[in-house]
Image 1: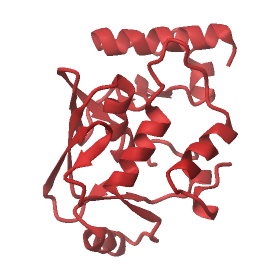
Image 2 (image 1 turned 90 degrees about the horizontal axis):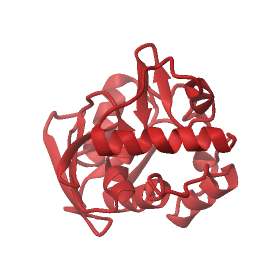
Image 3 (image 1 turned 60 degrees about the horizontal axis):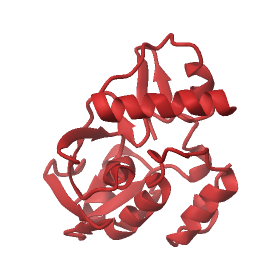
Image 4 (image 1 turned 180 degrees about the vertical axis):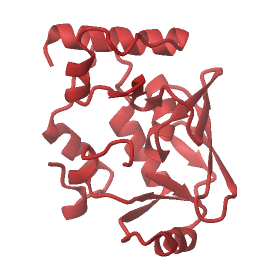
Length: 132
Length: 71
């Protein structure tokens, strides 16, 4: 990524956080950001501005007076961290279907008796980031 | 990366879906990882992390060993 790519990336993130808007998928430079893992494109355009998901997911985050979607549990808890605020995460246990909820206060979960599972090793995360 | 009620629920889901177990961690550790990994993403002077920086972030929250080795 060169300085022009970083400026584009920062502009896209800022606009998404402030207005909830992303540029169309054919905006020049997006493919370079995708290739650099700075965002994730799919056939519809920008899908991920990690830790934020542009599309609805089961990981719902309340933070900074707004609702957001995380791409996964790691990203969901990353949204309050990125915003620098406390938050609330809700998700569904894939096993039992129970709704799981946790507050994030000063970067720590409450309650903290839930667990996160990483199916793939770190070397394979970007092989198929949507599955990951 | 998914959230589960407990390790028992995780193990049952893995078995029923035919997946090999990966790595399970308590939510407190996951939150620490999230803060370390994502905390700078909206900083005005954000720069891409190097592989070495990311590996150090994993190690800083106790995630070491072959499973956590970045490519």
